[in-house]
Image (cartoon, rainbow, N blue to C red):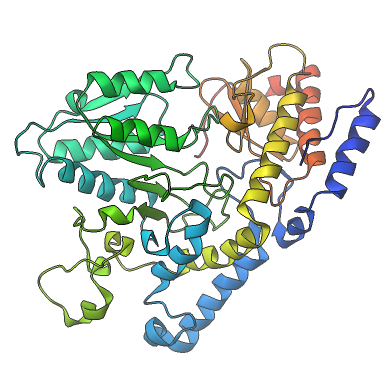
Length: 437
């Protein structure tokens, strides 16, 4: 799928955008969503689909009908809910069914997986010799990744400043693979943990290349896929990624606070979770209430607490939509939408610049538009029912979600941005910031 051309006149440009929408194979999926206004914040919270709503309503009806017996008598039963959703997710991340489970939150899953793999790298205890190595991160990470990792280091009596190897960005937007390799070569790194897509700039990292680099230097490779799952295909198993975490409320449209997911490569299936809980016990003997933890023989061993059915149910329906559309076709449209967005931004006057990579293979599902008045411009857009978000210090972040965003919607955003800038409408808003992830 190619983005529409930009015409000689506004009327011609709009006609071209509409023609592209008319030929879009994913266009029918928009009718399955409730889309509020001109919505371009799907990488913070995806829109509600009829499918997600139906699966949530079904879970509520099962609660009403079965009460506690829903754990065994609901269809599908609640007892295996996390594992079953993991099986549905596996093709979207290029994993085997046994390698994926649905549980916890992104941050909780970072805690348990970082702790597990850090202990594994150090003979089961960070206090053993040789001295514990470092965890490779970067200065553009979403803060929760660092909060969790620093907390795990402190739990082991280690100074996070001494045991984090930070890859510094060169331009405040992106990192280079050479910089990652330099840190791996110079430091004793036990775990490389990086995002697949940077939340500000939208840089898409080459997970296979980074995994190979990590393994070549004796480190585990882990990734935070929060800004790529559901909009970028992955091949976690074949690329030998050791572990990964992600959320489902962005491009997978599973709702606010939706339960999260994780991947653990089958070669690491013998690791005992550092944060063990009853729900990660092998299912066959779970109700024998043994005092000793017997972990499940797949990724479900990393479940800690009981799966929250009402927070997981919408994911069931939303996965049906994504699987029906096909992740490769979703990616193809995403690339076309963001390429069109970049082309339109480059025609804006004044101090507007594109802060995301131009090359499609290096760009995730959103585009960062930079401007000194980005916050006030964001507020002005929202006042015109155009929903985008702001990121410090100067980024308007626009995410055209492929399942429900049209090319004409992208055009509307940029035309509105041009209007609020040229008329000075943005100046009525206070220069202060805020937002959600």
